[in-house]
Length: 309
Length: 284
Image (spheres, rainbow over the protein chains, first blue to last red):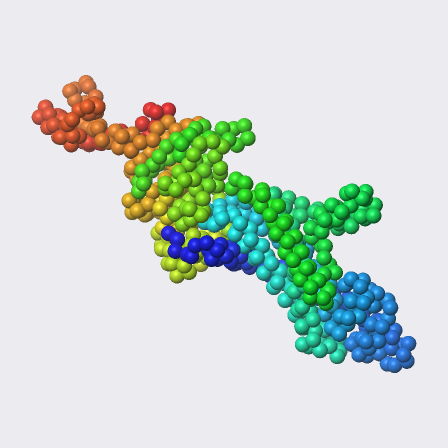
C-alpha cells in the first residue's frame, strides 16, 4: 500500500526515483562510465589540439617580436589574441568578435572548452535519450514502471537522469580542461580556468537540453532502441542541413516568418545566447532552451501516452 | 470486466469478455494458448486499453495509477527484468514508486525476497540469475508493497516443485487479504489453490464461478472402490445432489458410504467433485 504524500510532492518524488533508477541502470551497465570516458577523451583531444595551435601561434608571435618562445604556450596569449586570424576564429565560434573581446578576460582555454562542450554534450544527450524509453518499451520492462507511476514522471525522470549524466560528463570535461591547462600551458590561473570552464559547461548543458528533448521525442515514438538511435541521428543531420537551408531570404514572404518560428524550435538554435554576457539575453536563451525541450518531449508524449505497453 | 473487446490489428484477442472475481479470493484464469489470458491481465493492469467494454478494478474504475497506485501488483508474462540491477535494488525502486517510504520500501523488498526464496541472491545482478530465479523475482515484484490485487501470469512456470509449492503456500496465505488472479495451464495446481475460476476460450469467457461449483465439490462425491461393485459394474460410485435437493453433501455422503459398507463394498477413496481438468474439457 502507498504511504507517500499525494499530489505534486509525489509527482516530483517519482521523477527523482525514475531519474535515480536511470542513473543506476547506466552505472550498472557501464554505459555511464564508458560515456564519461569517451567524453573525457573527446575533451582532452580537442583541448590538446587547441593548445598545440596556441603553441604554434605563440611561436610565430615570438618570432615576429624577436623574443624567445617558451616550451609551453601561455606567456604570450595576450599578444596571440591580437592576431586577427585567431580573434576571428574564436569570435566566429562564440558569435561575434566584439563579444569575444569582452569575454577575453576569461582564460581562452575555458572559452574553447565551452565550445567543445557545446558540440559534445548535445551528441551525448541525443544518443542517450533516444534509447532511454524505447529500450524499455522494447523489452517491456517499462511495465514495471508504468504500473507504479504515471507516464509523465517516467519521461521527465528519464530526462532528468540523462541530464544528470550529461552534467557529470560536463564536470569531467572541466576537470580534463583544468589538467590540460595546468600541465600543457603556463600562466593559466587555476581558479580562473575552473570558473570559466564550469560556467561555459553549464551554458553548454543548457544549450544541449533541446537535443535531449528531441532524443526523448524519438524514443517515445519508436518503441525499438536501435531504430530510435538511427532516427535520432538522421534527425540531427536533417537539422544541421535544414536548420539553415534554404535561407529565409529565399523563401516566399508569406511562408518565411512561419518557417523561422518553426526553426526557432530546432535543437541547436540559440548558440549565441549561450555565450552572451547580457543577463537578459541569457535568460531569454534559457527560456528558449527549456521551451524547446518541453515542446519536443511533449511531441513524443502524444504517442507515448497512447502506446500499449 | 464487462464486454471487453480488444483487437490486435485484424485479430480479435478479447471478444466481449465479462467476468468478476470476488474480493479476497484466489481466482484461476484458465484457457488454451491464445485464449486471451495475458491480454486480459494486461487490460486489467492498464497496459492495454480495451477497444470496447468497461473494466472495474477494485471498484475504482479502470486501472489508473492515480487511483490504483500501490493497490495492484502484476507478474507480466513477457517483460524482461533490467539485467544490470540487483533484485533488492529493483524491488526497492518499485516499492518507492508505489509510494512507500524508504524504510517501508526496504522492508517490503526484503520480505518479498524472502517469500520467493531469493534472499541469498538479493545483491547479485539479475543477469547472473537463473531463469527460475528471475521468475521468482518477477513474482516478488507483484507482491512488493502488499497490493490488494495481484495478477500473476504463469507464476510457477519454470519453478522446481519445491519452489512452486512454497509459492503456492505464500499465495494461499494472502487469501482474504488480497485478491489474486492467476493465469496458468497447471489445472491441478489451480484447483488446489483457487476458490474461483474463469475459463476463457478464443477471447470469450465460457464461465466464471466458484471453484466448488465448477468442479462440483459442493454437490458431488465420487467413491472409488477396491473392486467393481456389484461385481461386473463400475468400481466408481457417483453421488450428485440435484438442484433443489435440500440434503447437505456430508450427510448424503455418509449415507451412501454406510449403504456401500453395509453391502460389503471395500472403499479405497472418497473424492469431492470432479477434477477441474475434466470440467474444463467438458465445458469446451
